Length: 168
Length: 54
Image 1 (cartoon, each protein chain N blue to C red):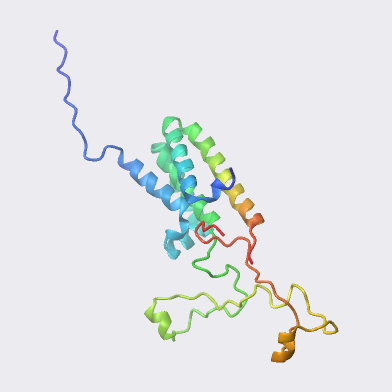
Image 2 (cartoon, rainbow over the protein chains, first blue to last red):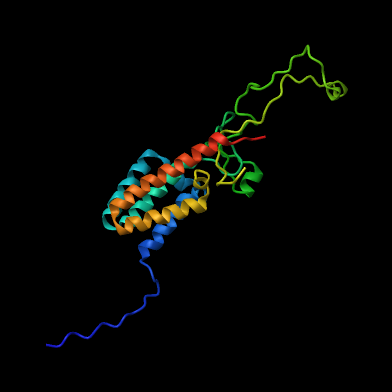
């Protein structure tokens, strides 16, 4: 009995499994979560969305383990990322923008901005550092400009701001 | 080591290692994913603790 002839190898145009390409894309998004649109992040940060996505990941894990783990890592990366984009503070302590309002500022429409709130420069309304004692000597520039500072405010920034991994 | 955990490139390298382990044996992948998540979490906490803004 003759052995069957060996099958010739056909090179595929993708040298790896497509699931690997998807998995690599997911882990890239997991380490750069701010590249995901805000709406998508909100859905996945919501607990219903998180549970649904985790359940989907568990199901995918039973079929393609690498892809399922990549989905779980994406979920983790999104939950680790703060809601900050750009240089905004994650803690809005002043004037949340009412979403029901129809009127928008012209620059908001031009730049397609969707502000969530107006952020005060500081996180707390109170002066937290170095209240100035009025009995102490004044600086010359204060006397010259007739300034009466009540305190020296450090520029507070929340600890959990993540500017996409920028090194400070 | 925790400094590297804050860099997306190294996070990505770690994640690819996790995927390779998961492809080899799913249990290894789960264990590696837990280690990776803990590494990234500790790195972000470490950076938040050491951050100084002037």
